[in-house]
Image (cartoon, rainbow, N blue to C red; front, side, top):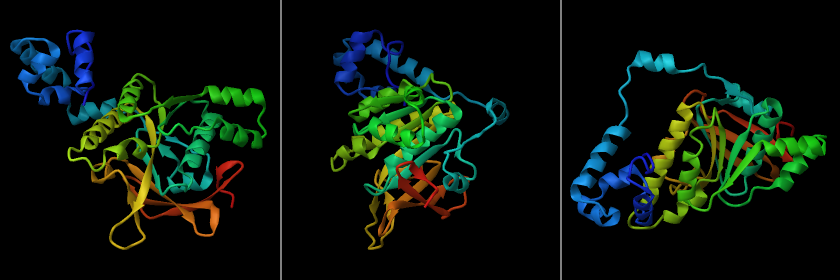
Length: 304
């Protein structure tokens, strides 16, 4: 749902008062009783009602017929990850306008894979990449190590680092604000590492606010994808409760169907420097195909 802003409310003072009461989106505002909003906004009942009516009209989805939608779609393309086996697994690479989830247990190599994909894309396409770091663990040292092993000069390394736009977010509100700030970027490539770090703090509360935030994040991600964004999200995998060794995404059932393609990553037993990638969910790739990649001084690669 759309985040509240000054054109939707009278001024910044009203906006700040709403944020202090954890009323951050149009949906939050519409669900609150008019009598409660009067005291928060210092407005009369008829003014609150008028605001609600205006928000309903402005924020409702416009009607569009199928032919108009077809004409508005640009030709979809693939972005190669630079990892041959992974590109083959994905039938050519990352499909523009899709959400990819890199899901796996702790320390299986999700971040290493993100870094390798990030660097390979920058080297081959010269595109800028947005890296949203939720755990404050983005490692410039590791990036320099990988690039130096690729025989790159300090000047080339600095040019690549300038292409990486790192956003450190400390809570789910910062993440939502950050994603809204990316709406005007042209065909962005976005990596979110990782989503559970922000969401799992809401687990166990009687009122599951986390579900509302995941809904909001999903809506913004879908909006960005409609603008030809390519999005990678890392997610923690946990074991099922049915006494099997199968893994499932940690965020919950609502998120389960949000990614267009899910890559399940596991560490190969007795081979700590290797990972197995399986595809349990996708809208365009055959399921249960897999590949094995290695983690080394060059990053994640197809060489075993």
